[in-house]
Structure formats: C-alpha cells, structure tokens
Amino acid sequence: MSVSASAPTAGSDADTVVENPVLGQVGGRVPDMTAEVPALVRRARTAQAAWGARPVKERAEALGAMRRWIVANRAVIVESTMRETGKTYEDALFTEVFVLADSIRFWERKAARHLRDERVRGRGPLVLGRKFIVRRRPLGVVGVIAPWNYPLTIGLGDAAPALMAGNAVVIKPSEITPWTTTMVVDGLVREAGLPEDVLLVATGRGDTGAALVDHVDMIMFTGSTRTGRNVAARAADRLIPVSLELGGKDPMIVCADANLDRAANAAATFGLGNCGQACTSVERIYVEDEVHDEFVDKLVHAVGRLRQRGNTSAGAADVGAMTFPPQLEIIERHVADALAKGARVLTGGRRGDGPGFYYEPTVLVDVDHDMDCMHDETFGPTLPVMRVRDTDEAVRLANDTRYGLSSSVYTRDTNKGEAIARRIRAGNTAVNDGYIHVTGWDAPYGGSRDSGVGARNAREGILKYTEPHTIMITRLAPNKDIGWLPNSKRITTLLGRAFSRYYSR
Ligand code: NDP
Image (cartoon, rainbow, N blue to C red; front, side, top):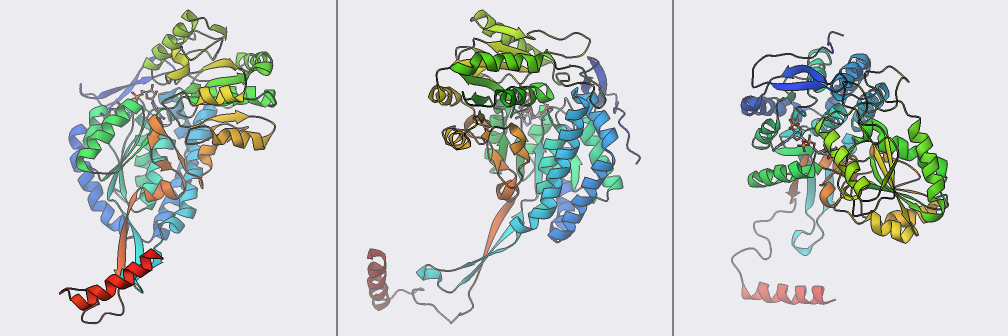
C-alpha cells in the first residue's frame, strides 16, 4: 500500500483552503480545477466507451477489486477522514469504510439483475406478435457532486452504481472535505486496477460543481435544498437528468407504549451520530404526554454521558467535531431562538471547549413549532423534544414540514407502528429503529418534497444512471402491412368497425 493520509498542499491563491475541524486551523489546500472540468469530462467520455462495452460481470470484478482495496487501506482512510471531517474513529470506520464496502458489494452482486435486457411481447393490436427488447444503456459521463458530511460513502457510494451501469464518473467532492476522495480515487486507479479515466475527481468550490453540470450527461447531487434547486435548474437548461438528495428535518415519534430505554438510546445514536451532521438524523422528537417526563430523563442520561472529542482511536469518543464551522452559527441561532421563545436546555447548549469546532450534545425541552429548531434543518447535535397529547397530534406535527426524508416511530405494538408510519409523508420511516434503513440496499432510499427527487439503492438506484433503449423486432415482415399508406376506404371501414367493437367491450 503506497497511499498516504498526508494533506495535499499545493500553493496557488486560487486553491481551496481546507480546514482541520479538530485543530481549528488550516490543514492544507487543493487546486481549483474548474477550468479543467471540460477536459476531465472529455477524458472520462473517451474512457467510458471501452468501460461501458465490458460485460457487467467484468465491471463487477473491477468493483470487487475497489472494495477490497478500500477495506485493505482502511487505516489510512480512517485517519484522513477524521482529519478532514472531525468524525470519531467509529463514525469514520463504520460509515466511511464498511457501509461503503457493503454498498459496493451489493452492486457487484445485484447490478446484473437490474441491468439485464427485458423481453416484452407486443400485445396491442398495432404491434401484435412483435418482439420487444428493452435494454439499459449507460448515460455516458455521470457527475457526482458530494457533500462534506459523508465524503466517501456518498461520493464513491453514488459512483459505484453509476460505474456498474457502464458510465464513467467525475466526482466533485465538497471543498470542505476533498482529501480522502482524492487519495482513494488515486489509489483505486494506481493499485486496484480501475481503468484510467473511468473515475476522476475535480476539486474546487461551487463553481467547479456548476461547471460539471454544464458538461456531464447526468448529475447525482447531495447537499442543501437551496443548491439542489440551482443544480436542477442548470441541468434543466441542458435537459440532462438529475437525482437530488437534499436536506431533512426528520421527526421521531415516541408512543406511550414504547420501550423508552431503546427510544432514548436511539435518539442519542441517530440524532448525535456524526455530530448530527446527517441528512437522516433525528432532528425533532414528539413524545406522548404520559411518558414525556420519563423519556426526557432517560434521554438526558443517555446524552449527558457521551464523550466529545476529535482525532480519536477505537472507543475513545462518542461524538466528534463539526465539520463545517458555519454550521456552529446555525446551531447557536436555533438554540438561542428556542430559549428566547421559552424552551429549556437540559444538557449541553453551548460550544465545546478547545481549538476545534465543537458544539455540545444538547437536549432541549418545552419546544414548539414557532421555533426554528422545529422546522429548519439544524444539522448539528441537538435534540429538541416536544410533548404531544396523542399520536394524532404527533403525526400532524411530524408532517408539518417542507421536508420528507426519513422518520421513525417507537411503540411496542408494531402493527400500530406500521399504521402510524403509513400516515407520515416521508421517503422512509423506521419502526423502533434509526436510519440504518439506508443500508437496506434492496429497498429504495430517497426523499419527498424539499428532501429530493429520485432514490438511491435497489432498482431505482441504478436504473437512474441508464436510459431505456427499446428495440422492436418484426419477424413476420411482408411487403406491406394492413393499415400502411396509401389509405383505402375498405380497410379503413373494416379496421374502424373492428376497433370500435374491440374498444367498446
Ligand atoms: P451545498 O449544497 O452548498 O454543497 C453541496 C455540494 O454542492 C458541495 O460539493 C458544493 O461544493 C457543491 N456546490 C455548491 N454550489 C454549487 C453550485 N452552484 N453548483 C453545483 N455544485 C455546487 O451544501 P453546504 O456545504 O453549503 O451545506 C449547507 C447545508 O446543506 C447544511 O447546513 C445542511 O443543511 C445541508 N447539507 C445536506 C447534506 C445532505 O446530506 N443532504 C450534506 C451537506 C449539507 P463546495 O462544498 O465546494 O461549495
């Protein structure tokens, strides 16, 4: 293994400065490659021709080599990820290495089934007896615009099915977290045998992403709803398809009959994991009145004992740093707004100590829907808890949002849980669980309303990187079929009668 986790440090003024969130200081620089995007896409387009022509089985073997390389190099990947994101050791190892490896393995095994030709019989009267083949053709070059919260799992995780479908991919990592992606893609080409130019990286800022939209054949974007709208509008100009995974304000409902220990531990895990910087984080909690106080006691206990620090080793911390410093101001604003409107902080509620970008894991109570923390995405380690009369009120409030990504319901009665889940307008709902459903690769994962368009995983998650090409084959092919030009009164009358009878039945 010859990759290293040292930060790239080029030196032009146009370079993007990357901060180390644990130390709270500049960690290195990466070049702004905006001007190179057209040439990168041309290179990818050339490489795609041979890659897309390979049998799916061969592409699966190449992905298998990628997966094994990633797992073999996990130590250096974890170190690099911790340095640029501020994640804990566990967040880096499990979500950036093993979840990614699991998703790649899924596509190695399942892509062929989703990509194979479909044979359809012609059944309408005009195509009777014709044979139809629907093949899935790669789109060409896919642009993956990745965010800073899961640079590898999202960036490479989205690239994997696009590659399996026969596309070349250019990834634009977030300017906040470009190192690990650059290092891994370099290693995959140099050491894992991935063909040259099939997977490329374009570092830079928002302009680089915008340039990518202007040149590729499809965009997979993950990030804020605001930028997602801009990306979709720009893609609409070029009539290229987009898939958008955007923000969320995921509700958690705790019913009176829930296992309150599990619910409190789940809120801490799925609300504070990755320091709350996940689009599928628990962002607001509704608890039925009769168990509200007991749940809050358990939650404060679960949250209060968490250890926060960055650059960790196995088991040394539970919550890391904030990756993106402006996020600290959003959290402070939401907490201050809640306190000004009558909420109380039971634990946390302030920036953490140290030079790094920390915000303490926080529990807020006495919140309501007039507060920013209950309707705008916080994307931080805060858990606002609201008391509700009953599950009807909880469902009404859960749906009182412009977002619709994930959601969860806790109850010992799983039939009731499913019934409540069916009333929630979101792309995903877990009963008695957190957002691990994102790794249920056979089920689609996507957002509703302002949370996005399109889905990851399953059939939807790979067919979006293809276009259907329908081939119709006519075996019985005389000189002329009935109904072909020129028209004749006799044929028109006969067909008119036959069709009238057929469609009136
Ligand atoms: P953005 O939506 O601005 O960025 C996401 C990605 O898009 C980054 O790679 C970014 O590049 C790129 N980008 C920025 N502008 C453009 C553009 N005009 N055209 C094409 N690509 C562009 O997210 P932020 O990093 O600013 O985070 C802001 C908010 O987004 C957070 O507070 C959070 O609410 C939400 N978010 C949601 C995520 C999710 O998983 N759904 C992930 C991260 C953030 P660059 O970083 O270089 O500017």
